[in-house]
Image (cartoon, rainbow, N blue to C red; front, side):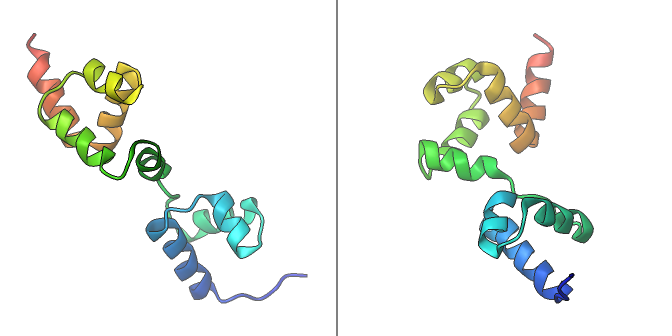
Amino acid sequence: MRLRTDKALIEQSLRHLTTEKQLTGKEIATTLGVSEVTVGAWHKALGIPRAKKFERHFAAKYGETALYDLEEFLRNGYSYAFIGRGYGLSRERIRQIARDFYPGIWIERKLRYADK
């Protein structure tokens, strides 16, 4: 038997839990008492992108200012290897983070070192 639910209420709740609280599908499912598959279907049907877990997990592991510090290191031209050593990550992982989360800085760095 299907329960009739208010679509606007589901959308509002899902947007709040996903964008503001940055909860994962599993966490939302547990909070609302539904399956992960249901939450995934709601995300898809309502066009709500899934939460970006990276920022939350990075800040939890390395401290609240870690993302700001990482951005400053990238802006100031420190090498990916140097930054990676500070966080215990590989040079390649730092490059991927720069590409995915700081595209402006990544492109600028790519162009700066293209001539070398």
